[in-house]
Length: 319
Image (cartoon, rainbow, N blue to C red; front, side, top):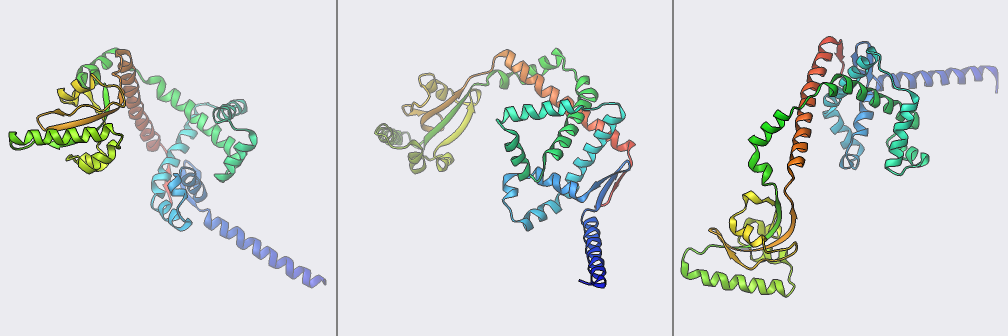
């Protein structure tokens, strides 16, 4: 190969590399600037890929990209909020050591029974490597430290607030016992003379159930309640919402039992008790309320923090 041909090939390679580099810059454009730090298109789309549901991942590339395109602004807001928190955390002197990152990853491996190899394989499926993962983990720990300092440490839920919630919602909280019910229902006849015919029909249904026929199939076939289409499934119903006749029937039943037919003002019922959840203790109720109030305060303070960070920042959107 002569000298001129080598020079020509080198020139072509440089042109190809320049075009590829130029294309990459165009593709990986800046979509936002947050206090002089840029957020690129590839960062945005990696985040959307990472947070995709299994249904989303099952879509074709074209359909998935269309959904991503429609949600760019929402996810970009999340990235901006994350970047603002990282910047403020660093400004206030917070830092994450390599040992903290290593410990966090070891905890995750232990929790999900992962080896180094299986972790790297799982990351590869998400388009990540261990270096990306360590960086992401470090950022998550830093943001968590920041939120602990700026938000969680300032949350106070008093006993008076908990008592006020209990007093307000006392009936619903105390009567928390629930029954998972399936029923076959026959409407109340308009004429009293027809009650016997309804009772005979219910008796025949009960005999079929006792002979081993499936409750849900019979409910679909014979129940005169809209729930019949779902095999008579009423789901979990709180005790305080049930008619006294239901409660009386359940007092004599174990899970899996089928009741004798019984009347209410609406009609004739045959019910199957599929499950039962006990009422919460007073301490459990208090603890759940404390968690709910803590979460409410956290969200209020977090939104206020983000609003403050955004107001002080220079943010430029280039979508």
